[in-house]
Image 1 (cartoon, helix red, strand yellow):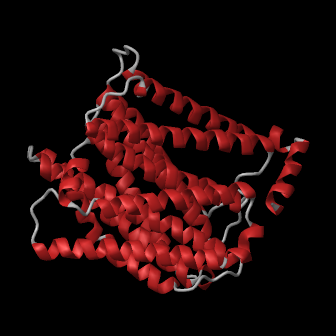
Image 2: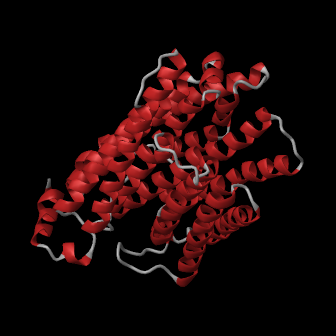
Image 3: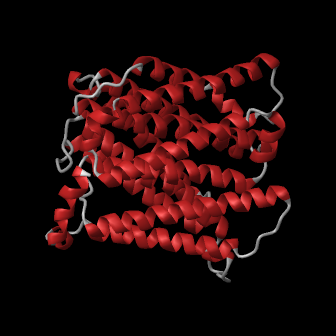
Length: 395
């Protein structure tokens, strides 16, 4: 995709590839990984334990359907096979949500983790309403761009701010409980975030005429969201001395980066409550792309990496540390370039070579990812360098 902007690749349909990229990023990476991690948490499996067969099948089905989307969207865009594969991922998510909801009843999971994980499942199912409504619009040949955008943003909002966010927080609470750590104000923070999730959707459609009472509700939700985030961070920091020595050093730095990025995201959401600014931003594609990557790559992906290190899913060695640093640097560089591209476009300032720089950032991400995968191979794990793990953990 990045090369298409700097090299003539006539055989590549950029629109088809974009659809394949976005669909696979949601289902084949984030949702797939969260499904596996949540299944391990609710089933009490360790970092190397095997999931029960029902979860292995559902996770495998999701991955198969995701690769089906990747291939079919790349070849035909919104064609028959792509729609079938996309529909299959929705069905799989429903089955997963039903199974996981039932299994969260086990007392060992703990109330905080159960609440956040169950809410994430609700938002996972709810987000599909945007997909179905968009499909209805396409089938009925409704070309109203505003309605189509509203449907897309509905899906994105309840995926990013619902399914992804609540699942990650639920996994974090699960880890804290296993360490015997119980932050304060857990219930109040949960209910604040749960109740404001729906109203904050309207931040994405402030360009749509709405009654004054609804706008005031959105403003109140934004204020409550900022307060809930501040309270939650304070409660975690208050207990930091109890778990800081149990975190690998690399996980600490990743979590700090996630917290900073999430704070920036909430601040940007607060600014978007200004209707004129919201209309300008949400109508300008580069800014939207930069915001979405901020959540998907910087917040969610880095949290997943941190969680994997915290639970021993990723082993700590010199190669993994260097590779994670390279991967993180590429992700941050990619985000900075996207934001620079968006802001310069808003200001009417042309900055050359950004597409080429984005190719470079993607290359850095790819190198870091390959190195991280290589660091987890059996050959590397036998290397004496693995003793770095103990010193890093103690740090």
